[in-house]
Amino acid sequence: MAKQRKNLLIVDGYNVLRSGSRYARITQPDYTDDTFNTAREALINDVIDYAGRHTRAVIVFDGAFNEYSRGEVERIGGIQIMFSPAGQSADRVIEKLAYDARERNIDTLVVTSDATVQDTVFGGVVARMSAEGFCREMALHDEGVSVSTSPDRIRKNTVASRIPADTLQKLKDLRDGTGGA
Image (cartoon, rainbow, N blue to C red; front, side, top):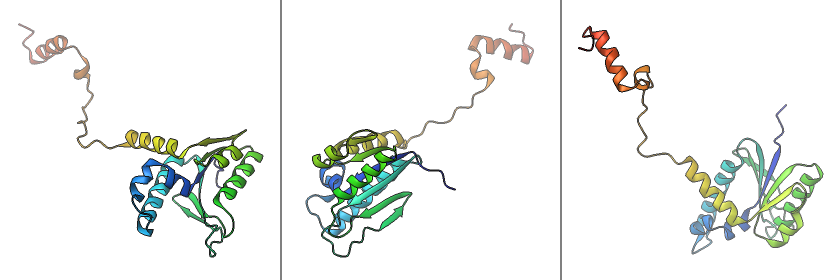
């Protein structure tokens, strides 16, 4: 049986895409399907990185005005992605997920800049983070995992490298039979 993740991250998908500076640069100046899909993919990858192995994550996108949306969950990279069902806002789904987590005493973080959702979900084991706060966290994460373009050479750690230079010279002289003279 799979081990249950102890924390829950709930992300208000479109709210973060529209409110977070990290994603605004992708969608500006238009909201065409291509740019929005690119921004969604960036958000999904960020949430995968942020959640890691110890946090269950759900991104909820608003599908209220899409008559074909059934609220089905898709799994990508270990996180759940869903569009709210037709006729139901993402806010309502997020509020229900947060309420259920609170009832089960699961530490939960809701990422949204929607003040109403923040006020509704906050309390107990449920914390909140703004879209911009999430963007700052991801920028810090990026800095922490950036790969150096000129990596340092690995230096072999030897006994000789830990001995003071004058002592090392005396040992070499002894070895070579010069006796330091």
